[in-house]
Amino acid sequence: MIKNHKLSRAISDVGFGMFREILTYKCKLYGVKLVLVDRFFPSSKTCSKCGTKKDDLKLSERVYNCTSCNLVIDRDLNASLNINGWR
Image (tube, rainbow, N blue to C red; front, side, top):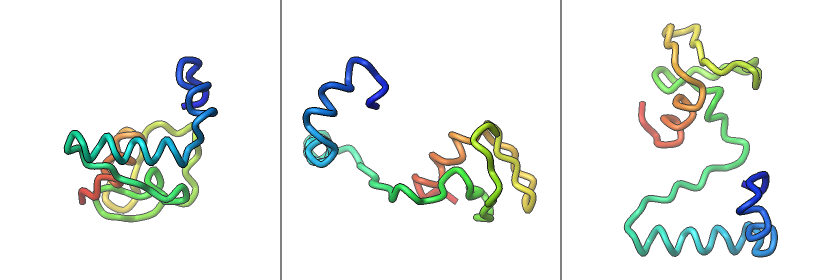
């Protein structure tokens, strides 16, 4: 988000701790589910269908191909399904 020129100054001034606190407050206010994920959680490297972890996934690979269950899915969609907890 810091690369976004409209948000970078506000986020840098406030800091991520305060940003998280404000985001948590706003989500509670509007009844939105906030999911906090550890920064090392392998959301892109884990198959959302069978749970197999692919250790050699490169950042340039935009499509996730699971060798166990033959799932072919967009990498970002796969990561979002893993974060959502859907299996």
